[in-house]
Length: 459
Image 1 (cartoon, rainbow, N blue to C red):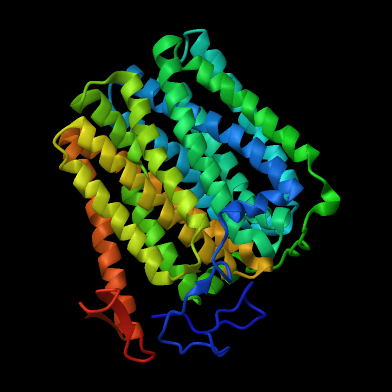
Image 2 (cartoon, one colour; image 1 turned 60 degrees about the vertical axis):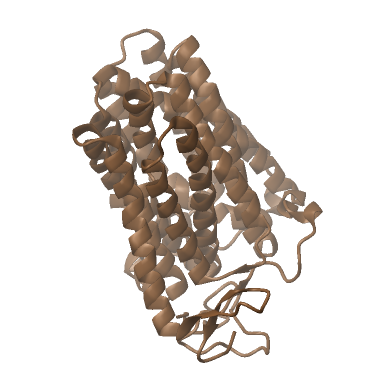
């Protein structure tokens, strides 16, 4: 069920077995994340790198503000329009550029300095947030204003996200890359825990405008942090010269590696059906539990609490297998299905915590697997394809789930949101198991009652 053994020229770290030989083509061998059990004091070891520490600090502030703006934006559209479908349409406008232009953004990340791209993108994002804040605080804001700014911000994201993903390697180098990815996820989810809570308070007390203003200031702080980085300590890779067929080359490369295209496929199902969760939480907060803006912020914070736990757990992961990534995606879908059947808001919130945990375990695992399977010279384009699916899929899923929630009911929408990824994970898992000759074996006398074993290589 695994990828063919990659050559050392084509990946950051080739996957080999304990004996030092490459695995057979039909097996998925574990990818070593750390060579030995990681001490707790090294859980965030990548932060020992000064440049990454500065970047993480600015990123943390920015993420809190980004979540504040996301929650405020969705709630503002819901209040102005009274339509959950309109909230989904806002999500579509913000993520549609990544679906259409994502590979182009990856090509730019390969060709130009990532740090300069990020400075430009964050400066434009600050201006957009400031415009949104002025419109909201002066009371003249209309739904179409939010639509336009969301679309332009989506164009910024096309350049920002691939450059941000690859820039992590320039900050820490290959030694701490996987840990840095998990630390970034932890930072994002900690910000996702704090941001929605603050946004809920601001929406209740003073309105959405101040949340937008906070994001404008946070984008400025990110630019400042990027300017403070020591350029002589960056692991800068040589820009890839422009050539004909660069995008096709990236696509062929991604499709040639199972450790890239299987996570890519699962990311597609998750993105379309399960990543527009804030849209559905707005419907549950407003139409099911009637808890208002504060309750909406609380539900998003509960998801982020579980995601934070998942992000921390991912830093402790010693091995990364393709099948474990698929398993985490299936568990996330299953949790959403359970939430759709929850009888009360208390049980709904509890399952949301578990949903956040499994979502982050999937996202960090798939991100790590895709990055370490990619050559640095082509990684920007490979990551842009991954981001195109992960972010662009939400452009399709947001309106669809919003329509289902509005015209059927939120419970049905959440059941679809979780059920399709769960079935997809089950199908992909069956395909991988068949290719790898894997079997589920029961041993009631052993320490592990259930084990996955290979007919080709034993346990």
